[in-house]
Image (cartoon, rainbow, N blue to C red; front, side, top):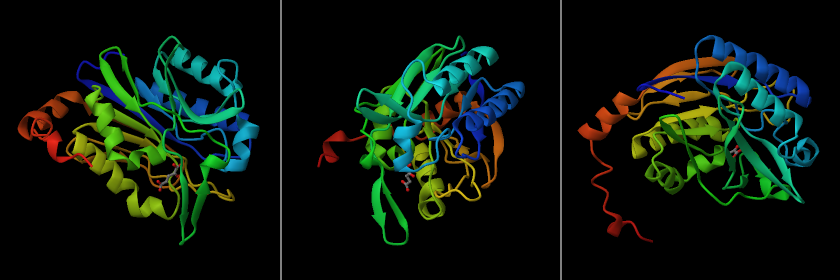
Length: 275
Ligand SMILES: O=C(O)CCC(=O)C(=O)O
């Protein structure tokens, strides 16, 4: 992938239903639409092929490299000659299941695989109760990859709450952090935009969050509001809660301008930040 400084990206905010192959059909249609608009990097949401319910993850889980969703993602990347961040899906390896983002290059080759590191185990009294660890195992590494001349990081949803994790990816050279995600109706309005903009400002990177659309009748109601944020904290593009294909240009010369005008990354004083 050549950015030449500017890179057009696409974000596919799709509704996730109880039918894996229909979800992939919709993803395929949206990927085509984004590629048709000239996007070179296309991003899908967290658990885009499976309703976001812990008890369903084992049933929908797929194994590398022959899972049907995995094969179709690789084929879509190759067909459109794009880099495709395949949101995330439940991935089975032996007896373990991970929340995994597979990233494919322009030949349909696997360029990265991120397994969600921070599992979403919360019990918020206003209604958000989730226990990913009931069925999932946590990943054990940050994922930073270079494709062509762009170095980017991939992490998943709850991973965004951990600034130290974003910083780890930035220190490994990432200029763009991509978060397939599925915030819900409580923490979504409260925190989603703030977290995306904070991570962008803290690390002087572009941030992209791809979320499922709100799906009528679904047990877990996603908040939607996929968005892209620049290193100054400006929102470049943002969806509402319905299905949408978003696109925008990331201008990496702007990132260099922000870093040279406001050089917080050079002013880092590590000696003060130990616990
Ligand atoms: O952090 C949050 O509020 C939402 C996290 C989440 O939904 C997830 O990790 O899938």
